[in-house]
Length: 330
Length: 256
Image 1 (cartoon, each protein chain N blue to C red):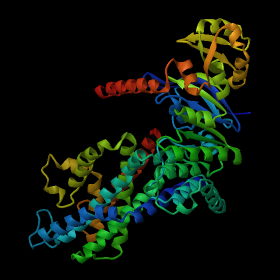
Image 2: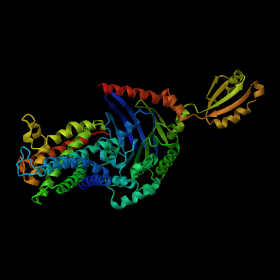
Image 3: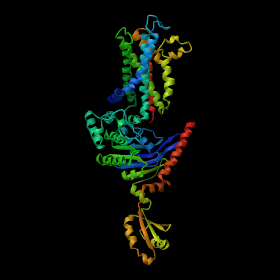
Image 4: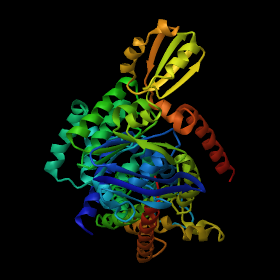
């Protein structure tokens, strides 16, 4: 069953299309990722799905409710962790949770029970009565995740859940996300511009660039689109080996550069022993080294957008600056 | 109004209370200015001479205190209304905006919280002024005074919410302070009767809602007012209702 359905969703800001006619579905129970550079339109998409922004055109349904016509029903069934902190930093952690629970009309008993539950889940029980201003960045993020879960939402939106956190805290947050996906059976939709985060967490993901979805599949399938693994063989003399390798049935693509031959294939680790069985003496060449490279999402991103995610961010930043300047001049 | 909306108003009020009682330095900070005005002007002008426009049997301190209370209400209410902007800046507004609750109820809750804190501060000033020789003729008159304080509070919080909803960030905050709050304060007859203003300036005082608030406070607390209390009340009720509608309307349109 699809818990989120998006059709031709578009958002324009003074003639600039931040989100350009995107469509996708999210299945119940999965972790779905929107991967793309800063400024690609991920947050705008999330804001439209969570009823914070009104789409210019197109439609969306969350938990079966229309994001335009049934806003309060959508709001009731979702939890959100925003990209920037959205806590009242003059209240304690517990008070922030209590405020949220009251806004979502949990009765007193449920409220108290649930606060303990979510605090336990993010391991903040002993810090619950400290003013949020004194929390570290990671603790604040955990508290926000806990708060997003307070009212038993069916879908949890996480906008860049680990932005600005150190590597260790990031790992922790990842574990919480996986844990609550499994334990609470909650559907999670997250945005990120960290490749390894999308790879580690998402069952399926959409790569988004300039407001459009350029690819959507499981991380595995996306990587396989590139032709699977790459075995690089350093060999002498290369010409002889090249013609021999071209006859290998499992090699999808054979390329040669600087005395190194690249073989694209699937399950590369199983093909290395096969390579070694080739009678090198009879064919007249010698293998010097073999290395195996699994394609990463970075390669996938490069394949679909023609640039690495860092280059994409640099050019987006440049563009945004120009837009800002234009706005100032107006 | 259903129970859901009442709950929202209560939650917003509760938050304001918690923040207020925790931020003691902020409270002292906002009370300092009216207190210094009260202290210096009160002693400075109270040396036996009477200000033009004030009848000679009224002590200047008695004339001044309702004005200072009105001023306290203005500043605390405006800052309570504008706190929407700080919530925007610190991101907390998003948490409120995605909740499945009525936006009008959110504004009403903020007003309820703001009025309570402003009233506490206004009454603190009133108590302080008793030590400076301010005399209340009839204790019951305090109740009427509180009504005026509440109306001033509601009106200017609504006004502040409207302004904060329009503004995108806190950058224009000092402009608001200089060009909106201070003129409202200085034209309202806090320190001297507005009849002392030249003819061309007086209309500005007449369109300043705080003028009627302070006049009403004066009328109820010391029994001296320029307009009738009925007129003061009418103007303030209309003003505060209009500002609640305006605040709710702009807040409803704000995007985070």
